[in-house]
Length: 254
Image (tube, helix red, strand yellow):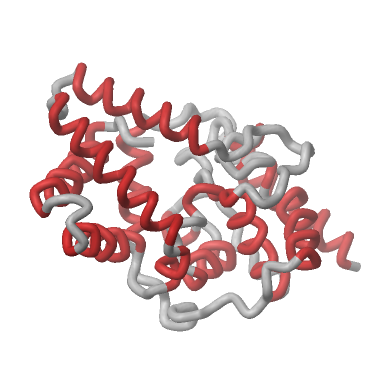
């Protein structure tokens, strides 16, 4: 019965992916506008405040790996970097869930998996067809992909999350922003400094992920802490947030 259900669900996913197969990817600015909207989104009351009740143990990660490979990897990629074969023409592009799951709280991830793309007019199916444990197992597995504690299955294709690759992509983005005169080189250097401090703090304090609020609010709270601890200045924090807002509409931020 479970196998039949999973096959049916996979068919639903591929149908949704194929619905936009003749479209090209949008300009990155359009995609990022949607990303910013999702990061600012208010979580519905029925999901707000939920915490994952399933320990991220070997059993959960094994279940999550099977569920993710069957239901998610075709679009999001084996490694969760949004580069699965069925997602190559989706508008907007599938999220790099290995990375974004490190920033999003349990309630947000469970909401998005459960309701799919309907709240934001994307192609992602609603996964409420899976029971709650299965959805939480997927959350655990996505987070493990981003943390590098599991090796991606080789089922659908796609790269594994690599912080060094992400850093290279950010350097490329900032270089293009300077070249296009969206920001100055000095602003790019400030952005990189504040971003690196923010990421280090987030990695050292994983509990911040479930500290309440949306991703933007949690980011602002971390920046405030970094200022209080004299790791960055208030001016640097302000410049970082200003550049973040400018890079979105520019189409440069992935």
